[in-house]
Image (cartoon, rainbow, N blue to C red):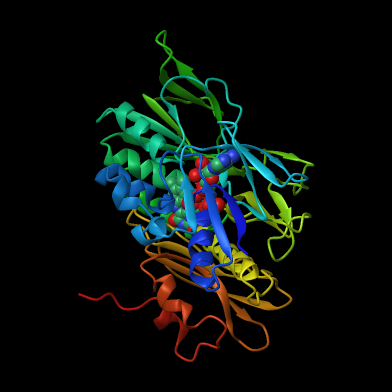
Length: 404
Ligand SMILES: Cc1cc2nc3c(=O)[nH]c(=O)nc-3n(C[C@H](O)[C@H](O)[C@H](O)COP(=O)(O)OP(=O)(O)OC[C@H]3O[C@@H](n4cnc5c(N)ncnc54)[C@H](O)[C@@H]3O)c2cc1C
């Protein structure tokens, strides 16, 4: 007898789960119904910035023809789910249709966080989460004019470079003392900042945005910073982080984590043994993540559970990051905070051109993780060393001679 799995959200992780389930379900036990709010079936959100240039939605798609052609799979786009009734085991879409499930996966992702700044609702204030957001931003861009990005993390830097691609002159405001405060230390950030400024970004770190100011037409004209300075701007992009989308009407309600996200155990199981949460909307063991790699691990894990395969608890998920685009190499991998009881920290630096901070296991000397900035070895090339004691001279591994 076949059972019905309903997946709410056809984003990167919801799609991965449905696709993996299709591959693993050799006994054809499941019918899968994927309900997506967006007009597009799943696409590669990580490469959204490339869409600024290519404008090819097809080029971003994650959905292969054989997926859609599979009779076990139903995908409904532009079909937002508005409620879940756990007792009746139904979900209801905006057009009112109830769909019954045997298993339910919540894969609703995140939404951009827009801080409560005066003027944030003015025309020409944007976020970057969907292809529609990029279309709207591109339509408003004015080459040669200044723009402000609020938030100096990975997404803010990507947004600033996107504005450059559109011919605008981007300023970037970060309230922390340096860029990418969640990932980098001060020295790595200086390598990044030096590179970013050479590429034409105007950086304002260590200050907040006091207000976004508009003209009589209701459009952005300038931004006032907490330090009192005023930046002319035709456009503002908020890139101040994301918040898990955990506000679906679920009856009875499911527990949420303290900092948001559907609370799950190490197997992505919510309190309801028929309901899982994966991707950015999930707080696995209380912690949500804003990266795709952990989301894909969750998808794999749940697909395996549903098809009777053994799964490992998701105790140690990879938070490695790498700045794309920009032309300045910055990456983190493995453990980067360094618990001094178990780790020894070693740093290497050559001016502002390259920097590496590496954590080695205090007893075994094994490489635990680190931060790379500038002309260093790539994160990928170093991956083979993680968990092993580096045999070669570390500096020559981290700072390879430039190839001509
Ligand atoms: C510009 C940008 C660059 C990024 N770069 C990187 C990067 O370099 N590296 C990295 O690891 N990650 C990056 N990310 C993050 C990465 O895209 C996410 O981690 C990933 O998309 C998470 O997948 P998800 O399926 O959980 O959420 P999403 O991909 O957001 O998918 C969730 C889907 O659920 C839908 N949905 C929500 N509520 C409902 C509902 N009620 N009914 C139906 N559908 C619903 C949403 O509309 C959305 O389509 C980037 C994100 C952005 C925006």
